[in-house]
Length: 288
Image (cartoon, rainbow, N blue to C red):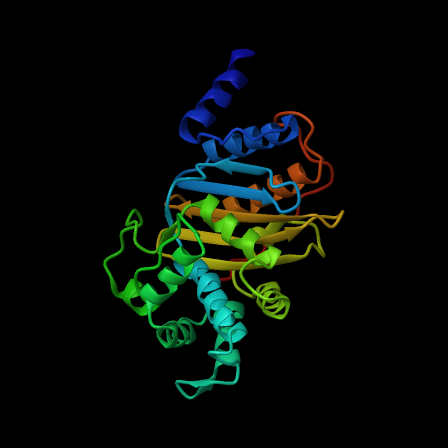
């Protein structure tokens, strides 16, 4: 019966091709992720990038997925870059509300109307797309406002308003490094992400209590996403992107894969499919 674990391993990688991590420890992590996802319904993409070593773990990392509200990170970054250049201010009044308050509502509470007010003030989706392209951020595209996206017929394989997991973690890495924003703006955006109150049963759902997570969630009918940065116990930071399309109990799938990434990068995963030490907490009730 020893052939059964081998068969399961092969099936996992047929459905979810990994991206050949360079170190044996992270290869073990990719195997763990492939096994987790092979047992789930739906279509999933994962990327995790160590912001220090630049090692990347990916499962279907180059497959495009709808961003949903995770696009709000790019919109916030573009607006903050304009503030850096003196062309806009956090005290500007847009739609009767202060820009800083709109950004807070957009990132912390995922307010769609606040998002579209900031987006249109920047010049619309095309303007933000140009900003990304000028900074050589590839694999991520912005085509519609949130209102247009929600009003459109749902197609979770539409490449508009999509990102690959790899592109999302690369955007997060460049934000964290200060490459895209000055220190105050970088810290402001990460602080807002650290206060995100939506989707607590996703990335945060099974991580140890007190783990620092700076994230942004996204939700559409049939789609659940969560992207951000996890700080490990030794202070290292890992940019992560989780996309779950179709299937059931998508938040729990994200929570399980986030915990596997946390354990793997923390050095607790020593060989394929070894259980991590310590209990895994159950995910709390859904919060969107």
